[in-house]
Length: 99
Image 1 (cartoon, rainbow, N blue to C red):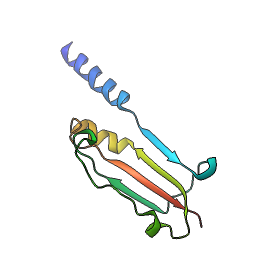
Image 2 (image 1 turned 45 degrees about the horizontal axis):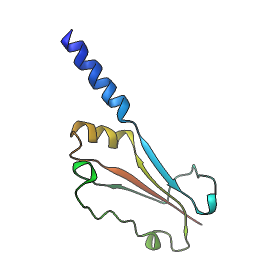
Image 3 (image 1 turned 30 degrees about the vertical axis):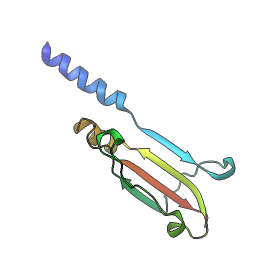
Image 4 (image 1 turned 60 degrees about the horizontal axis):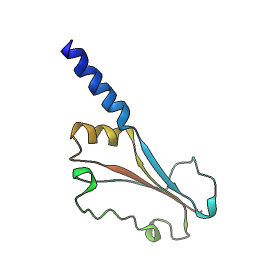
């Protein structure tokens, strides 16, 4: 019985951790579903409380301008956060260029 309860708690914790996505587009344009021009995993520690320099230089990535920015907690990011009990909390940053 105790093993079943432990398994249920772990399954619910993983399911409730979920994935989160924040997308920014200029002038309310629709979201793009194409492959991004740039993708990087950004590293955060202790649930993001430790200061980290996670900056994407959009001028270098997209000299003609940015079409869409996105930050996401993917399934893998969430799994790593869960396994490390929040000590390591990665997020994935993506950039789409105008051209």
